[in-house]
Amino acid sequence: MAVVPRVLCRRFLQNFSSPRFIHTSLKVYAERLFTEKHEWVKLDGKIGTIGISDYAQEALGDVVYAQLPDVNTEIKQKEECGALESVKAASEIYSPVSGKVIEKNEAVEETPSLINTSCYDKGWLFKLELANESELKELMTETKYTEFLKTQESH
Image 1 (cartoon, rainbow, N blue to C red):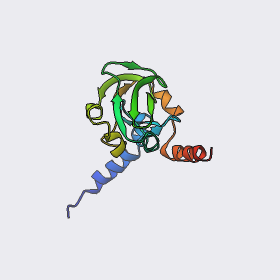
Image 2: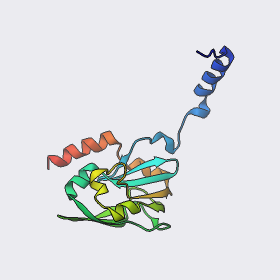
Image 3: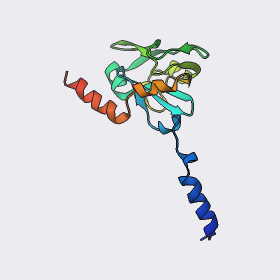
Image 4: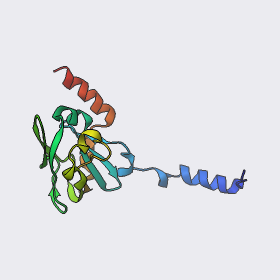
């Protein structure tokens, strides 16, 4: 077992509890944030990964086609930016946040069923560079989204 000098421990604790380690930026959103239309965004700094929720993919059924926005496309929050088609329905994709598309999931375009089998992992749709951090306040946390779904089921 390594012995760590008290001076180093004290410095670490002082630094850790100092105000410069309090995060007031995008990093506080470690979880996915959801829209009422069942899209989600997960942030990594100023990069947002966009997808649809398990509820949405379940409602769609087997997804057979995905049209995703092209790289370098500027997208506004709540703007239609793509489409998904399944054996029983078609649905537009609306971006939960504004930004510039930096990557689309070509694997999903080639194998749309990834949305059904892994909507939160391999079935993500596209990534964008976030344009307006304040838009995140309009989105629901996972807990609030779960509560929202319960109200939808009763209608």
